[in-house]
Amino acid sequence: MLILSRKKNESIVIGDGITITVLEIRGDKVRLGFVPSSQTTVHRGEVWEAIHGERLREPAPPVQLDPAWLAWNDRTIPRLARAIRDEHAWDRLPVLADALEDAGCTDPVILAHCRAGSEHRLSCWVTDLVLARE
Image 1 (tube, rainbow, N blue to C red):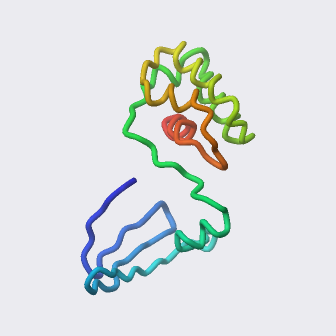
Image 2 (cartoon, rainbow, N blue to C red; image 1 turned 60 degrees about the vertical axis):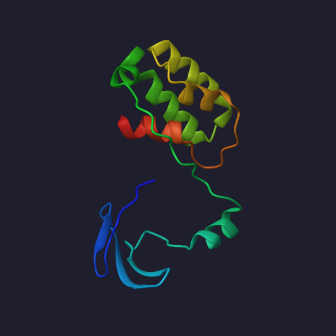
């Protein structure tokens, strides 16, 4: 999670197409203005949960990936992560953990998450992290 401080009339820009501006601060309420790209849908958190049943993304803990792990064995780890994510084959996350370990990863948070059998719907912070560093 990224946490920013902004004052009234200050903005943040996300990617190439989303601008968020602080319009008003009154007591404990903040009014925000969103200018999304034409391809982006915007929902309040509770509406998103009503549509999808639960939050789809879990926050990534502060972990580091060694670039050598990504290059290991002809880029096996990014290829595995992509296949798992694209096919929503979350049951294969333990295979990704084994590959990461073979590549030299000893991070207990990454390995435990991949081996925990936790439920995923559309995303996993480990596969997202691997593919973001690719």
